[in-house]
Length: 308
Ligand code: GLN
Image (cartoon, rainbow, N blue to C red; front, side, top):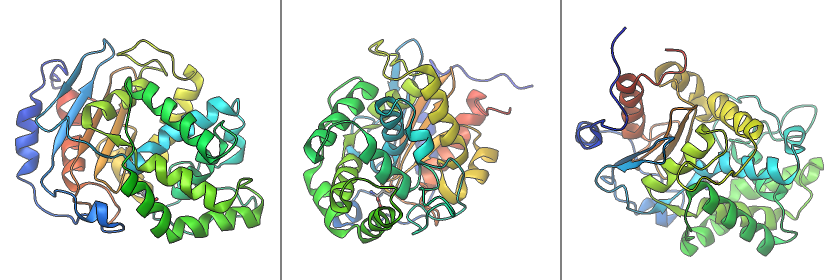
């Protein structure tokens, strides 16, 4: 068996250089703010259980978290509903795109919390009462995962709320099925705002590390969610986090992860580390092309494949 590199000394800058040489993919154009992203933004960060956070060049450049927020919305919904969220949402992979207009047959529940239907529901299940209250609960919750305050890009939030037709369709469908109890437009507004949260690679790596460390933020020492809930979230990341590319991801990278249209990927390697990569050009499944390559190399060189 080959000896793995030490995450505390791993050459992140070298990995960034190798990954930047890779071409391919297209930047998401679902909203103008994402279409205008710098295709050559590229950063990698690691957060270790001892609280060490390491970032490459550009690891402090902000980007909207987009779907990489979904594991954390699921976590907050689990905490706020006392686990009831597990019964309101399925946990099976769909084999379909993130925004497929489809609910679980027979139950009308969203198929899992990592696709848009599920995330619209988790964002509606958090405490807060109304839109403002839920926004505030999510703001505080995400800050606890990151170990610092996070801003929201108001333009991104507005565009996603206005232009997210498929999300509006999903919210209405869940209303019709009786699975969404808040107003459809309110559900989209809260979810869109959560997706518009600004992080950088270092903050996202700490968020991933908090899940990897059983719910305790390794930087602040705060317990953000119960260990059992952290395990639930990471399990669903492993099976559903990369949508219809989850099987290929598990085989090739072997680390529970969540992809997103901004080109961010958050990784939670249980008991070992959290990591994040940002690079906007995406493949046909909405996964960052350079991000995937970076994760494959990280997994290989640090020996992180959970079945390795
Ligand atoms: N906010 C985006 C949407 O709802 C997030 C999708 C994603 O990152 N895959 O369409």
